[in-house]
Length: 199
Image (cartoon, rainbow, N blue to C red; front, top):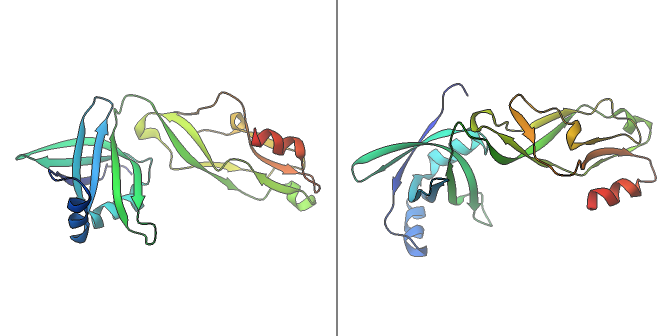
């Protein structure tokens, strides 16, 4: 998105289960904002606006959180850090916002998306996916919503490790061991690859 989306929120004084239940009955979601500088605020957000933002921004797109309270308004660049849903229905119970420093890297978990059809699967091999997410370092405005990887050239017995993944500009993978991400195993399986992935 070229311009950051703004989400409005208000401070809330009453906390606890009963107070939160009353908010949800009015279509308002309890929330908490915090950042590395130690700011910690209990908030309330319109559920409809929040749901729309989650669809639009996901977990890796920075937006502006406009917090109103005591006759003042403060804007914080934020990420959606955590969401809690009702166990039996697709409705938000609570959300955590994390205020970011736009000039500092942070570590975020992002999904992997594999594109194409591995040629090894056409020869009888089986595609084994060991990781569906990886952790990356990036400045907040450069965070990708997903890491795309073309696996068309992957043959039987061939694999990709985290160091093989092509990162977007300004993004680097976080890892100590160069672990397996995906592999085309022989029809009988690949015990060595499976054992390494489990380890």
